[in-house]
Length: 114
Length: 402
Image 1: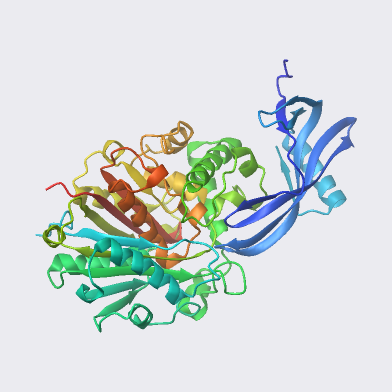
Image 2 (image 1 turned 120 degrees about the vertical axis):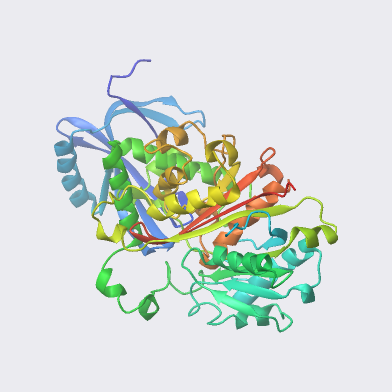
């Protein structure tokens, strides 16, 4: 299978699972697609708690924008998880527009891009 | 003419608690736990210890000021005990005090101990330094954070060597994933869980480009060492000896804080202390001669940049070495073979001795499934403070070969 030149693979991770570091943890809570300029953006919403870091405590809601969906769950990872093909958002101006829109829509403090 | 510390002192025994959320134990209990293992390993009686040093950073939430907590907890036989504090180098400072005391001939057998209990303070993070930080602290550092200043280091490093954001993030993720993979094999580690580079890179930001997995945590723990001369160790029946090859400490003097020539791309102190340490140990080519390292990975970028300041990776070359697996458990110089701060957390007074404990086990072939093949020299490194103003300690230990 050949992906578009700019495509990347996104492995769909289980929701509700604590991914813990020694400084805190994050949880992926919801996976969804949103229409943006006629294309479907794949994003994952989660929350982070920093409760045992050396440098303080805190937390935030966040959204990870994987990219525009090119192929939906077209393959499996070696661990058996579904894998989609996505086109990451690379343009900084486009990122800024999505960042502003998604942070207001999802009420999160951080919007990251894959 | 000073001749340095090489081969004048050996480690007779060491002990280390399990690090973690030790709700089951107070600070005194942790000291006793580490000391019992250490004493049994040394094969001596407690009354043979002639002097002791105790490293702890936060007496206000720990066991209090002075060295009395160590003396009382271990019921030491009314010997001189000194408490030392030098930020994150406090554990190594206690080791330095004990080693120098033996080397001077003032004592035959000395104890170095370090302990910190940070998990039951009632809040996250380190305690407020407050008035203990000195009256000038809030004038010169009014609103900084540790992640913020180390993020500046990451940005400064990336700018100097023209490294793309995703390339730096991937290298830092490899640093962290490697340590987590090592920590799974260590029963004394606080967090024993493997994580993938993808999970690390998907974590939210703390201070760009440092994400959640790029930062270390607090923990509870204690570690200690008993040191003596090679001759006394031999007389006690010890065959394989681990000798102190070098002990160096370098402190900032205000140069970096001026932000004039310094480009926020490296640690001045580490670069100086490591050169002195190699000279003291008689090491000509550290990339070829150092067998393993435990460095101060308070942030992943610290470990990455430190590989260059230790003169092992060339300037601007740490990312290539990291991604080539040079510092992995199976690489040329395994780094954080015990899991590092990422898996042990950072009970400040104990960390330097915890690092030496792993080097000691490895040199004696007692590291279990983490054991690397035929190590000769092990290096430990602590960095207390911030990139622009810090305390750096380097210790090198190795087999006694005389």
